Amino acid sequence: MEMIIRNPRDGIYAATPDYVHAMEVCRPERFLFVSGTMGLDGKGVAGATLEDQLRLIWSNLRRILAEADMTTDNIVRLTSYLRDVAYVEANQNARVLALGDRRIPTTAIVVETLSDN
Image (cartoon, rainbow, N blue to C red; front, side):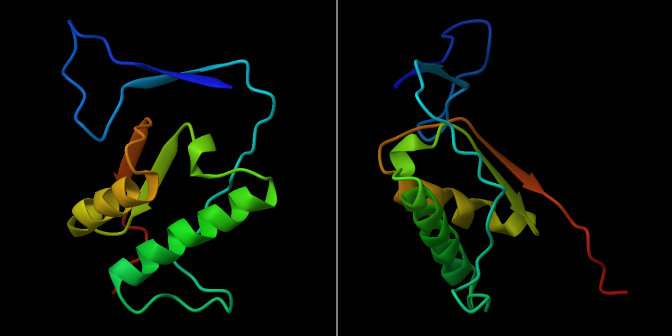
């Protein structure tokens, strides 16, 4: 499988160092669609801190990928759902740490579906 980053240089805002506008995937042999994962450990317990939960999310993703003999190098698109806008930077840092120099199309969506009322 060949992956080609597609970042137009004019007529659109510039991509950032950790972001790409699009990824062309050529000749893929297999696809693995991941429904998503949470910051829970093997017993279903949430990490105590945001950083613990983010570490668990990436650990869980690596485990799911390994089940299909894949690694994070096989990820071609990522969407993160965050409970609070304050988590954006920590989420970005965890993604950059997990992917290293690889850049992929990403979207972070802040959702508030639960109310304390």
